[in-house]
Length: 257
Image (tube, rainbow, N blue to C red; front, side, top):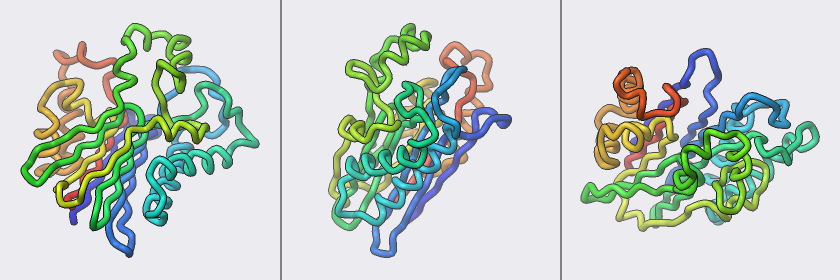
């Protein structure tokens, strides 16, 4: 088994709001977790802690529960992790605020029989079959929202964790039911990768290669290599029109099973 992780902040003057982790329980199998903290617009979000605090706690609980509770489906793992994280700041923060700290989620867990997955919001999971075919597991609800709508803070807030909008892991455990979940027989999976949107933009924003080529970069150059490629493209003035912000926190986790 090979596992490779890398994460880089979008701005060295600001904290990285992504979270990556991997676990290889003594009982066998493994877990990858990738979170992309949602940067709030300027103004209050009802929380005294901040997004990096939130992603670290949510990510830690997701990693521990995914590895220790193999009997618990991943949507229940997410629900319990969200509940426990909310309890950590329920007494100090306004968790009803629409911009309370929140994150996108990818969890992938495997054992000798199956590879299970969960995706919530716009991070990406790639699953490679033994023949090299790559499947991208996506929650595309945010992509369905017109970009002009997302330019308005008020309009975005109205769609955040709301019917007809998009969903992220925040303070309500019920959001776990909105996640894209599934499982694949272990023998049909050669490798998996979890990408926050700062890393997946190599494919889905800049079109430098398809998902299979993206996974090939991860295999050959590692997670740092993919992020380096993203930063190189972002620095090209000719590609400025393809992005809504120059740099973003970028994280990638790759595992060969």
